[in-house]
Structure formats: C-alpha cells, structure tokens
Amino acid sequence: MLPPQLSSNFLQNIPENVYLRVRNGDAWCAYYRRHDACLVRLGAMINFYRLKPYNVILIKYKGDGNFNMEIFNNDNIEIYYPRRMIGLKKPRLTLTTGSTLEESRGDFSNIEVEKMAARFFYNASSNSRLSYDVIIQNEHLQNSNLLQVLSDEAISKLRLHDEMTWIQLRLQESKRVINLIWQNGQVFFNEEWIKFTKTLNLKEGDICVISRSMQFQNFNVAIFEKNEGSTENEEGSGRSDFKCFKILSADIVAKGEMEIPRQFIKFYGPMLSKKVNILLPDGSTFKANFCKVNNLLFGLKNLFSKYGLGESFFLFLGYVSPSNLYLSVYSPFCLDIFNDNPNKMSLKDIRKHFVLVPNDAADSTAESSEDSSETSSANMPHLETLVTSYEYLYDSISYVSVHSSQEDSFHSLHNNSVPNNMLEATPTLAVDNTGHVISFTVTLTSSHVDQKGHGVYFARHMLRIYSTWKNGTKVTLLYDQGFWNVVVHRKKKL
Image (cartoon, rainbow, N blue to C red; front, side, top):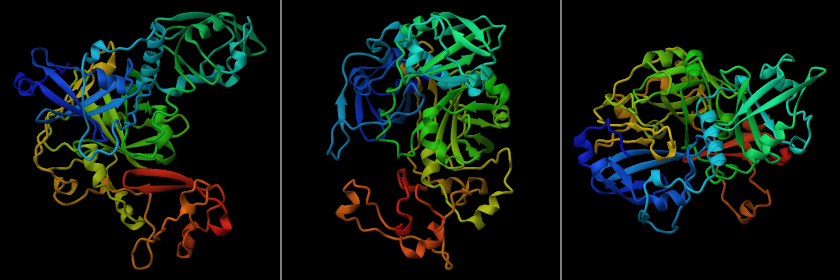
C-alpha cells in the first residue's frame, strides 16, 4: 500500500497498469488499485524472488506507470536479481496474478517467522559491543545437564559473573530460562539449553548471536543458519551496486555509532578505509570512522544532530569507493527527509561521475570540513517517501520518486566542478613521468579461461608496482560494474 502522506492528486495520477523494474532490466506487471492506493497481483514476483517475512522492498516511481524496485533480504542487504528469460534484448515482462504482498506470506511456521524477525532486527538496529557469536558445535547439541557453550571471551563480553544463577534467552516470543552452573570461573548451561536448540532447530555450523538486552539477565538471540544466504549473492559478489540499511535505535543515536550489517561487510569490508566520507543526497559530506574489528561506523553524532535524526529513522547505505559511502535517510513517518530539496543526488549520480585522483591531487582534500559541506545543484524535482509496516516489513517498505525528464550530470549539478570533499584519496592511480596511467593489455587465449589457474603475467614495465608483491598477495581488479579479488601466484613469473 502506498503511503497516505502522498498527496491525493499524486496518487490519483498513477495509472492502473504499472511495471515494477529491477536492476537487470526485468519488469513485472502489476495493478494499481486506486481506491486504497495499493499495488496488487504480485504473486509471481513474490514467488520468483522467494520473498519472506521481514524482507524489504524499496520502490521509486519514475512516472508513466513505471516503478524501480530494490529488494533487501533478512541480512538487510540488497539481493542479487537473477534473470528470468535470457537472450531477449527488450525488457522482459511477466504478468503477475493473484495476491498483494500482504496476502503472500508463504507457508512458514511461527518459529521460522520468529527467527526471521530476530535476524532482521539484529541486523537493523543492534551494535556488536555487547553481543557474542556462538558457532554451534556438535557438542553443543548433545543431551546433557552440563554443557559449556560460552567461552571465557563470551563471559567477559556479555558481562556475566558467578553471582548470576540464570539467564533468559529470547528469540521474539519464544523464551527459555537457562540455569548457570559455575565451576572455576567457567560457566555451564543446564539441559534447558538443549530444549532451546531443538525449538530453534539449530544445527552444527549455525551461528547463534547472543546479545544483552535492557532487561535484567535477559539476552536476545539471533540465528544465522550455516547455509542460508551463503550463495544468495554469490553471482553478484563482484558488484558494487547493492545497498544495506539500518534502523536507528536510541543506543545508536546516543553513541553516534552503528554496526554495518555483516553480509555487507563480507563484500565491502576488506576495501573500506578506516576514515570514510558519508555523502548525502543534498551534497553534504560528513567525516566518520570505520572499525574493521567489530564492523562499527562511528563518529556520526554531528550528522544525526544536523538532520535531527532519532529513533526509528531508516538509513540506507551504498558503497561508492573505499573511503566514501552514500547515505539516504527516511523518517519514522515514512518520508524521505530530502523530499523538499530540488537538487537531490542519487547513488547512481555519484557513482557515475565519481573521480579517482593521484596523490598530489588528493592532498587538496585534506583541508576539507570535518563536518559537512553544502553544494548547490540544478533544478531537479523529486518526490520520495518510505512506506513501512512493522508487522511484516517486506510487504510495504516503498520508495517513491518523481524525476524530471532532464538528464543532469553530476558535474552540471555542481556548476561544472567537483567539490574537494567528493574527491577520492585512495586508491591512487599509478602514473609514469608524463602523467599517463601505467597499464597493459592482455589478449585472452584458451589457457586464460580453462579454469586451471593459469592466469596472466604482468608486463615488465610495471615492475615497480608489483616488485613488493609476494605469493598469496591479494589484488583487487576494478571494472565498470564493480570489482573482483584475485591472488598472486608464482612470484618469479608474475
């Protein structure tokens, strides 16, 4: 259902037959039910992408009955979109029939829905400082009244002590009181732990995240199943175009720090710098810090303060480069906070025209403001809003936008100049004495693609670049659509 905050005139002008389009060009036909502003006949789309409770859908209205659509899984990252029909040059259209999102929840048990909810809220709003990952081992699943599940590190991180004789573990509605038996500073669980694992259907290799809650001796639990999500984005792992999102909690706002969802870090964490710029749609830039140990993005209090961000705001993060992240923000009342800004820039605008500069040019960025810098842009009307339902978030988070027909470039938005705070300091480009980028060309032969690890040899004129590399050195290859990680072999014949 589209949000009631939108004007009635806007809602009445959407045609009845609409198309939902994803990144790969696939389009899904749907029907707009005008009397209650609801999109229906989405059954085929729901089934194809295997949508589950607490998945999230973001839609942007482009005009003439066309919506762009982004889907986020239970790890709070955007999914990879498989193609339905290969080989067609025209957009692929599929007529959906049957249900609305609200009516297509799938055949899930109550405990499965609880596990999805717990995982969603852990990714969306938790910080890792007071939580611990328990990797389920076979001995954790054996019937016994004395099970050592928590290590010394877990005891310290969860702030347990020997005066605590019990704790309560809570998924969502499912709760279990576990008796604690202390021996020589170590803690053991009683048989109630085994009942809890059976209720949750835990298996060896699953990750059980235990987090402190605000209630005395109560701990929240989130489950990351061993096989779930391991291949969901595998084909898209080299992309640089998927996003993640967080929901601000009171703790995040107070501390000015938030944990980035772990699956987003799995792809981008190795590339992120310790110091990052947060780029916003209005052209502002904020300095922040990133800690790779616990995936925390911190130093955000100035940003939260300037825009009046508080509990239940939605933040969508997109990767731009190793030291730049794009951030869009939605209020608890389902409105894009930049709705009234005619100069709003999208993640696509910034990625398309982002600049990589050599070291000498990057030095000019050091003097930039640590808080933010405002830029002006050409007239580009937008109307965007976020729709949310706290019962099943997958069925109603929406992003609606009306764009002008004018295709403004990033440079024209900023009077043909790129502000210093938008220039990337790392990685730098290797150049020779004449200022030309050092590069070489490889003509593919059958040995390059026979999947036997033959690879390619580097040209000798790049010796000064790879002379310090060793066997096993990881190298990131950048291309237009993203990146790919490779490893150096045979140092003497690189």
